[in-house]
Amino acid sequence: MKIKFQPALFFVGITHDHIVSTVMVGYDGHRGWINYLAVLPECRFKAIGSIMMEKAEEELRELGCEKINLQIQASNKSAISFYRRIGFSDDKG
Image (cartoon, rainbow, N blue to C red; front, side, top):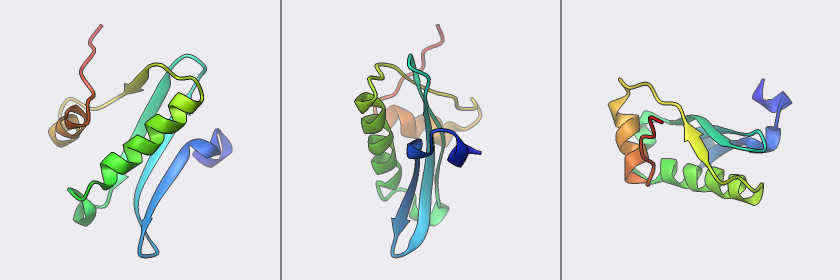
């Protein structure tokens, strides 16, 4: 479905001819959304997730986006930790 809507905001990370990560990004003219960042388990802790997020943020900034939202399940502690490490914070407001 993402390929049909804003396909330029769907990124795939490839290492040695293998897909190792993906991320879907959206922008509605007001806010950016980063959804479904995924990195193969055996490729985690190698900066791939950070690189994917840098690309997603860069593309959103080029579109004029000033605020990026993430939706993360509270039970996904490893994802929460990752996003905090790269500068995101919880905004409950």
